[in-house]
Amino acid sequence: MISAHGFGDPGKMKEYHYTGPVEHRFSPYAFNGGTVLAVAGEDFAIVASDTRLSEGYSIHSRDSPKCYKLTDTTVIGCSGFHGDCLTLTKIIDARLKMYKHSNNKSMTSGAIAAMLSTILYGRRFFPYYVYNIIGGLDEHGKGAVYSFDPVGSYQRDTYKAGGSASAMLQPLLDNQIGFKNMEGVQHVPLTQDKAVQLVKDVFISAAERDVYTGDALRVCVITKEGINEQTIPLRKD
Amino acid sequence: VNSRHSVERRDPCRKYLLSTKHISVINDKRNVVLESSLSELGYKAPIARKTGTTIAGIVYKDGVILGADTRATDDMVVADKNCMKIHYIAPNIYCCGAGVAADAEITTQIMASNVELHTLNTGRPPLVAMVTRQLKQMLFRYQGHVGSSLIVGGVDVTGAHLFSVYPHGSYDKLPFLTMGSGAAAAVSIFEDRFKPNMELEEAKQLVNDAIAAGIFCDLGSGSNVDLCVITEAGVEYLRGYDKPTMKGKREGQYRYKPGTTAILTKTITPLSLDVVDESVQIMDTE
Image (cartoon, rainbow over all chains, first blue to last red; front, side, top):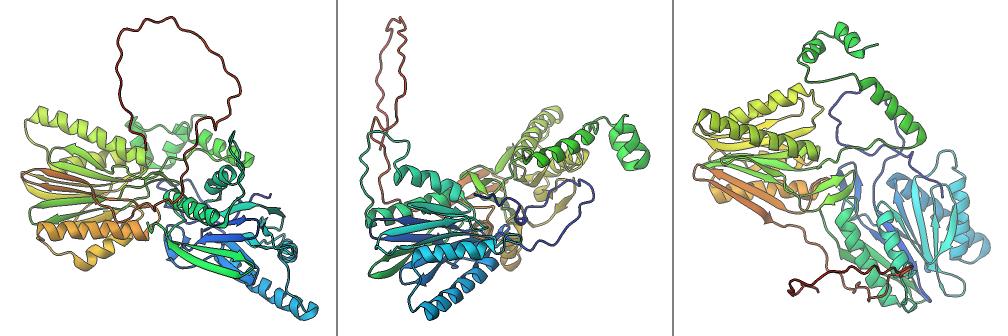
């Protein structure tokens, strides 16, 4: 996966000593924070995100969820630069409509993932500063998660965390869902209730230590019945 | 080439400071080269942890009230959820510190030590103005490299005083002050509701609300509000005066059963020891 360290210049506290003349270029990117998480189960998928939109040390909004509904069976979570998140979701919506009108059917999760990869790579040399995770049901009704990097490299996963607190959440999920680094533990398949509970708990912990994560958590549970959304409060500091 | 001499000739101010032999610039060139070569290789030089902070102080009817949040950050990750930012300087003088955490801590400790020696030397209780003067002289000497922003408040024989001192050595004397990354949020509360000679409860509530504004509106500040009320009678240090944010309740159980961690190798080394005394202490486990 490509590292996206070069993006933007997050608003920092002023440094107190003068290091010499520095040339400032206009940066087209900003980092608006936010964490996204997706989990795939046997017959369900969950996409969750916090709802805080920040920049530098300030908060723009406490109610800006990062999950966007694409079809009845697919939700995408986008975090990173909010401007690019909005434009990218608009483009995906337009392409979904075009596909539906040409092919007389909705796009499947796998198809959306493949399409998103080409959309992102199309901007290889001026990337969308967005970390995407698609969650949904595949053609067989099983849960599917596809995770992307900003330039379109993707793979299908069972679970993935993206965004500012991803480094805190991913190891926890590896342990609790993937049963990594544990011995003698029964590999019980994840039930929907257990998965939702785990997602909530994991975000509560992330909000403790990551300053960009907090305010509220939006959880979208995708089943063959439809998409069920719930919002639970998180720390506001 | 001795870089110290070449700098002297160009800048008269610099020459005065260098001649006091308190600051050495011979490593400046090396540091610049190091940092650029580090960034070429993709590494970052270690940066000092900042407290990202909201600190505030007001003068009220009977003395001063200092307030601070309790979050310490390492870049944008919370390093300490409940640190103490109100430091002791003298029995009647306390100091809130923002900026680089280590600098704020050490500077205030040095001041506390100097103040105690001064008190013993002169036989007089310390003045807030004296602490401020020592602080600004030290910080100016270090030309801003000691990155501590401080709010010093206390009650001495001349009355209640509140000063703010900046890393480069300037200071302000005002009835209300805020500093740190959450200063803007906190000062907005003061500008709205501050009045001279407020009563104790109203004043405590005002400082509390100012720090709370920083906690909620500034990402660098968070957790609890600490207050310190200083009057002629004495000091009331209210640690955790208000806890406007609480950790969410986790629903799941995450304790591991014994044996979950894999044992790869096991070596037993018997130590021949005699049992001299045996005592049992019950541990408090969930």
